Image 1: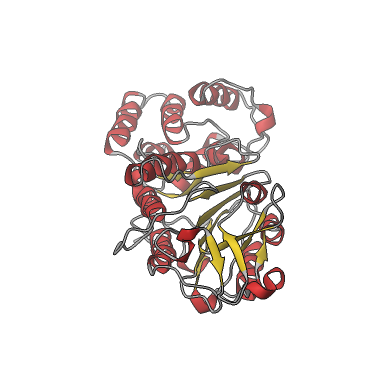
Image 2 (image 1 turned 30 degrees about the horizontal axis):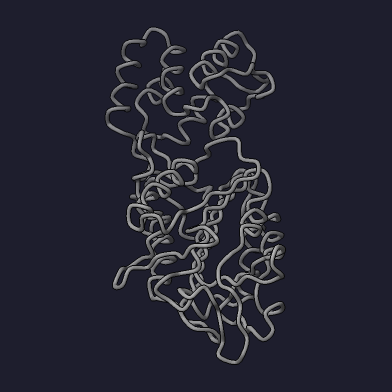
Length: 369
């Protein structure tokens, strides 16, 4: 039995609650990292291969270990992969007013030597830029209310003190680059809520619900980046009205790319039924059946999930269209006439789509023709 999987997904989850030199944070912070890891690797949810998901908690999350695992991620992830980096813990703002920057506070960060014992935004950004994957999403859940950061300051009791959290400038740095995006738990002037006795922070609770299928409102079988943020951005203010607003930064993001399976890749029964009906009605015309199926599975058109390229096609041979359906109609008409790229055929396109939707009835029927 082949279990649903998303083999191109990679993740690094970091959670620090018990620091060596600064006040700690609620236990929910550790749960956040563990629960995101469990959700990503669950075959019932996101389908990541467990070996591709690394979790660093408390004493494991030293400055050296975080940087080493980011470097290892850069080696492991290929251009066609999807990478998620999640950090829940302290952030500290450094620099002068008007030129503020931020550092990631590792478990062994010493405020008396913060420059050498923390991870600067420049260092973090460079580590992310070395990752070859075309889809990289960074989650930052910091400045936690309910912990020491509620006062918006981070001190060690020895005369060293910094404003806690992350600056807007830092968020922009971490989201820089094509295919890069950042999702943060709150604005720079807010705190990230953790309710007393709750298993997870408010932000991560919404994130987990989204990853567990709530963000896939159309039932397409994938969790997509814009859909996930929209869900989280709507849900967090329901719990903390007016005081916490997640933010999203993307410097050069053109597509609503998938980051994981939704409910193990399960499509809405309504949508699946429509595709089956369309396939039956078009049984004498495989091209029409394929067009209906692909328009449903890849609503953004042939560029969606790089399906056209993966099938051996050349996107530069396709004309721009205003909608995904129009793009598919135009692309398949060109393919039928022998165009669209030297290596693409009806068979290679069906096989590429079956890599994403192995049990799809229309694709399976078309492959068997």
